[in-house]
Amino acid sequence: MIEPFLLTALLLVFASVLCLYRTVKGPTAPDRIVAVNVIATCTIVVHVLIAFIGNQPMFVDIAMTYALLNFLVTLVAARYLATGSVFT
Amino acid sequence: MPELFEDVIVRTIARLMTPFIQLFALYVLMHGHATPGGGFQAGVMMAASFILIAIALGLQEAKDRVKQKARLPLESFGPLNFVVIGIICMACGGYYLQYTTVPLLPSLQAVGAILISAVEVGIGVTVMAMVTTIFFSMAGGKHDTS
Image 1: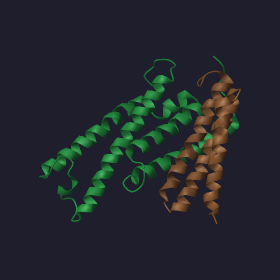
Image 2: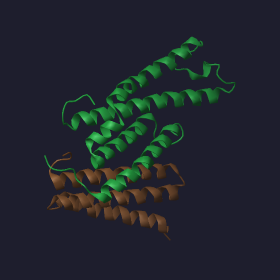
Image 3: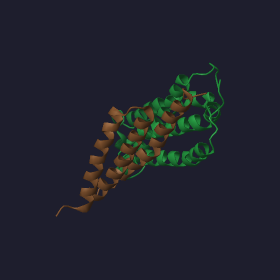
Image 4: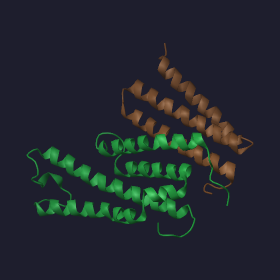
């Protein structure tokens, strides 16, 4: 009987690999941005699950750093797509 | 030159998230000896909060919040702090950065923790000022001294 949390983490890793295909193959730039964003979200959840499975609370810190800084990445990429330059 | 990207959601979220990013950077800075992270990571996160301000609220707003007049001394503060603490350790009869020789407290581990934290704070402040300066230089605009 496999642990449910470990199974969830493995499924999320598999979902990240599927998103990686979209990142590489994606016909347009917004596809790639959304795919990278989904990979980041999966990474955050996998970090928290690893922290729970291995009983290592420091992984939650890394997940929080990811969560706080990925907003910035998406914002910059979306701004660049919308206006053609990051700064007006 | 097009108008600034006026979006209420982006501006509000950026203004709401900035203090939390800075608070988390301070947490990473002060817990650097026990958890992953430390001075450099905390400085980069603090700089990322200013980059977020520059993206969402405009470059001039970020330049007003961290002025060059404050950034330039802070860039030199970290190495100076490092050297001063190292030489204090030498003056107390140890090697360079041998914290346990400083007769600050009776507990040697407490002295080490305090001085390591002081060095980390210096590194964090320097990295914050340096990364912010590099970002403002790369962001272009007019070559003013603000």
